[in-house]
Image (cartoon, one colour):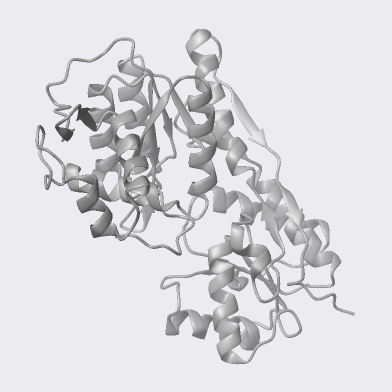
Length: 369
């Protein structure tokens, strides 16, 4: 349903909710959708907001408006592919994750500027779902795909090696594919990432220069970007002759406002004797603020905390968060530009673009004597 506290615009959330109803068969091909007034009452929003949501579904080829009759679900399975269509498919693991908002905006703004529309597909980090969407995108005659690789975990092992299935299927149909954010070692195609190694290195150097030597790392997903950030963390320790302690690297199994997370904070503070926590994303950092407050641990007096991403709320926290700013909007724009270049020069070598990050220093780190 709709969360008005979510950073994703309401009309996009509504669009995704209606799209899910179409995909699950609640609204079938050829069926007329409820009137805008009905949707407005359902979601408790204005008809203008509903109109924006429906326009996105029209632009992305999921519904059509018949003058004087209303909006109808398109029969994509039996649709005749328009060879002149200008649609870009965007495969993302979870469009509600904080970092996705700016990434999507960057892709869509650049696509609109170049006369393209986008179809957003939520893979839920599942390879089977990614393959399903690829089949649908091919059926819709998309001109290219921007793919945030699946980081599926199966029996404790990362299944990212299967991402080649997605890219190969698109290649077989002569559809250019641009990977974003994650590099897959066994997939050769165009790629846009930010410098995760450099971000981890520079933030750890900042903490070391502030006098911290026991620096814990907290993460919630074992992704290639996280691997690179931790590698940067280790390199910074090495450069400052600080011994690496693997116990300070902690995976959150139940994140959010859970007892296990609270217990982990106590362990980091009192058993591992850490003076700082490097959260691998800002959402985790926000959870750490919650737990430290409940435990009577003051930030940054008792424990310094830094994050990664520089989400909108980072500078509005009780102690504004020091974090790594990722160029997510620019990543989105760059991926669309790379697609356009690939269309024009299909025979050129694949490219890798690495966008630089920067540290945003605020008030969540204490300088130790």
